[in-house]
Length: 195
Image (cartoon, rainbow, N blue to C red; front, side, top):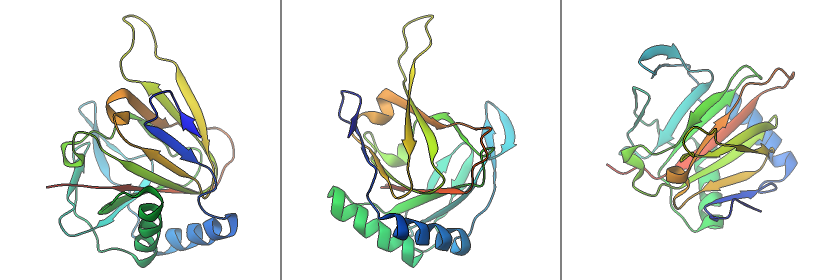
């Protein structure tokens, strides 16, 4: 299924079978080096509202929100999943930012993945595991004085979301908090970082 007319965002709900997605969730939660780090938001230092882990090739240094990430060596499962995403998309990735949303209080605010290390037209391939969460998209350019409407997509376990082309220049995305009683969600965002 394609989201928006630009064709720069694609969603495949059943990239992985449910049983395999469940096994991946358990391993990723148990085996990755999760950390909650302090970031800069609107000039203030705050704790990230989720856990993260950065893996990849030695040269894949990445910075955002005042954080500099030095990659840990590939975890075998992350590397295996990378190969499957690459085979499906025909693209190459050298790193992955893993995010763990422990419950509905963990979130990701509105942003675009447009850091210079990702190049002028970044590609982000996001795999989801665990609890379903709402993924919001909105256009970056808004009519003066008007709010930009957002579109919600429910990210299912085992799904693949591919953002490519001008998606980061045209759209912002977010994973909002929810009061619903939901469990752990992990997503893996594969990227190609250049020096």
